[in-house]
Amino acid sequence: MVTTTVEGRAPGVADLYEAVMEGAVERVRPKMMTVVAIMAGLLPILWGTGTGSEVMSRIAAPMVGGMISSTVLTLAVIPAIYALVKQWRLARGLEG
Image (cartoon, rainbow, N blue to C red; front, side, top):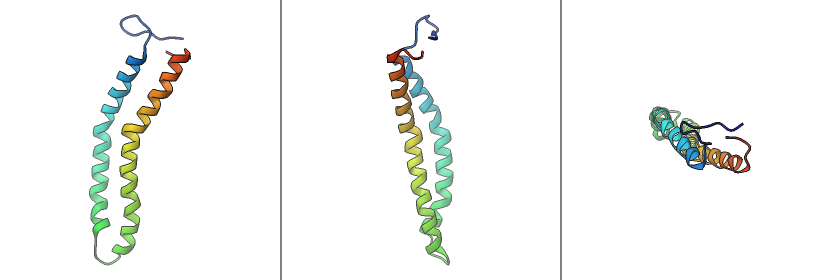
């Protein structure tokens, strides 16, 4: 079943990319707020020099890397893969 847009036509690739870009832009602020808050707590642990800092920095380092990679994944990779899959399905006529 093909859905129609406001103009009365079937959605196309341009509509798909517009929706993906709008969705990715709306995710930037919440994702960045989360990342900044977590990084603000992890960086002092990562750079600490006091008692127990050797163990804590080894725990904090992968968490900092995970926050950076999850940001790239959420804001760039997932929307791109979603757009490619949806474009392929639109081209095959599987959905609208």
